[in-house]
Image (cartoon, rainbow, N blue to C red):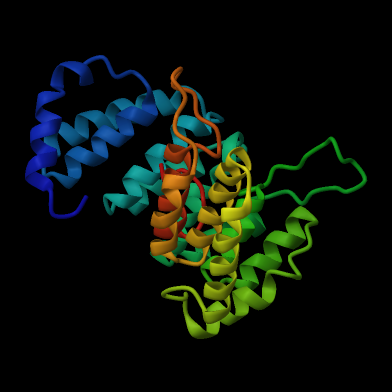
Length: 270
């Protein structure tokens, strides 16, 4: 986090023994980026070289390639990041299909690259072959929510065309945000709606109240109502004694709300 460089450097120094066992390219990229930010350039170069070697062994493994592209980009090494990106095969798969990186690009204002990835480096979905999925960047509905939340109606239309998905209901919101900017907090209508939902929780049975409190907390986070989120968290479920988590548990709801408030969409940020 900005402003805590000394503390971060101290923690990273104490972790040297553990870092010696790092073998995953994604972790290597993260360590390389951390060292670069902290001014440990020689150390950063060694970790970047190790990550690049691991990435070069499999051109289609986006679980390791994308973190390296991301780390290089965040360190201001956009040309190297582009080389790693262009040497790839296919598109990210698995959870969110690279949407966290989409959010990173949108926050950086790199919409031309987003347009290229969605429009030029994707194969349109074929509705006549529902089980033969095309190769598409950001093939997840969270991408549509991110494009909407960051006021990108043109990119949202493009995403809808490539994925044969209807974005008609989201376009007015994206256009309004493009014209007026991202809202700094909830509207009067949203405040009224969240207050009504909050009041209705008191009448519910305990188990139902926990579940519904989690849903209302997420809705409050989506419109930037931080106070409501904090008020609702105590009503959500405690982690069970076995350490398991589900989407209604307090820890899970807290992480979900933090992600939504911070970046506008509920996806892991790295």
